[in-house]
Length: 304
Image (cartoon, rainbow, N blue to C red; front, side, top):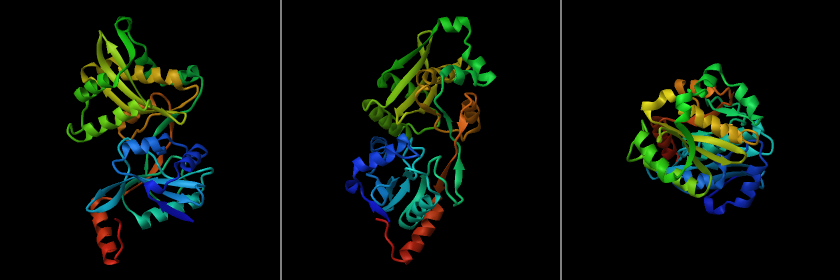
């Protein structure tokens, strides 16, 4: 009942309808998001006549397709009108039998009996901003109460991609300037041109010291990037920016913090008192992939 479709075989009208009506609805599974973040045309697993779908992005290495979620794509998995653990398990079984998997994330609604790694994510659900703000931790509220002198010399602005790019490249830590950062900027630029991505900056004394990148679609606003000038971290510009975007959107949109695995990041996000929404992910080391490859070659199976 589950079939595998290559990109050119997908009925994207039916695919979009399935996503729109699904219990698990996520912006990261939309055609525009996957077309932008994937480096190769992705494939799709379909149950019956698009009653349930499972997008499958991959890279090509060692002459084979290897499933790997793209950069900035946190959650995928199964999308259906009503989440069904038996159906989810059937998709998982099909995926594992027919693909080499390096990393594949399910979503926070998908129920599975299989024991897989669980990762953290945090969401704020739509509500009156005053109620959301009142629920912030005491520490976060203090961070948002800027000194009068700082307040007089600070400003929040929406900025262009070019201004954001200059700041991000100058203040990014932990990414390769030649590889990861270039790919992130390519994705950011594409999303910005499609009008999904917005850059918001905090200025102090006419100097840009914080930038966040937020993606809006499917009644969600997702924090895809948080970039800071390390010399001004005590001014709490990042907290102000996130609070500003929450204020502008929370009555009608879910706010997705897009992560929380690192202790310091988790502590920062928890200050906004979001709901923990864990999701499962299948992961295999390169060593295990080579072991599986050797076994499959012996059996004459191909993953081209």
